[in-house]
Amino acid sequence: MLPISGGNTSAVQPSTTAGKTLEASKVQKTEEVPSCPRRPVLDEYVPEEAQEPSGRYWPGKGEDGQPKIYFDDPERAADAPEQPEAVPDAKEPDPAAPRSKGPERKEDELYEGSTDKVDREIETLKKKRAELKQRLNTETDSVRSKELERQLAQVERELKQKDNDTYRRQHTQIKKLS
Image (cartoon, rainbow, N blue to C red):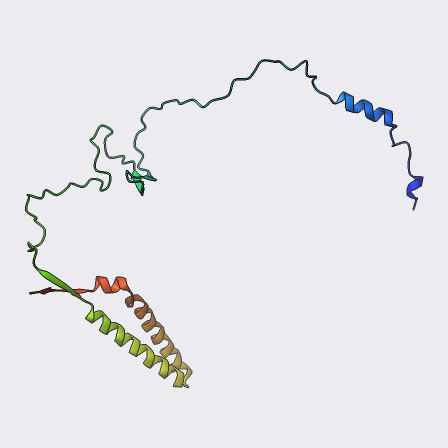
């Protein structure tokens, strides 16, 4: 192995050539740069023709500043009158016209919602789940314990489906109070 001091000295350049390369690297002198000021670049508005509706949805803000979803309806003609944006393609009911859907309701009638039936269903499912857990803990037969686990899983799925507010609202029984 050769010592560093014994390396090739011909690769080293004298300091006079290094100074010449720095001067040659200048591209332009200040006298060569044109002295005219540049105009600022501004955006320009170019109006577009009205595009055909494409059936696209986009988010925006409504008149009151709340978020709103807009829809570009391709079936509605461009020259058609604007529908109310809150409810597209909806007609406002005439207060003087009689209602045709359902029986007429008087203002002083009272109704009550009852979830008793749903509550009873949920209670029976909870009791069945507790009973199956107890039987599963005491079972020694592996075939029978697998059957009990299957039944327990089914009861828990049904309980998960029924023990929530949505199910209660959907299955509420409405009673008329006199």
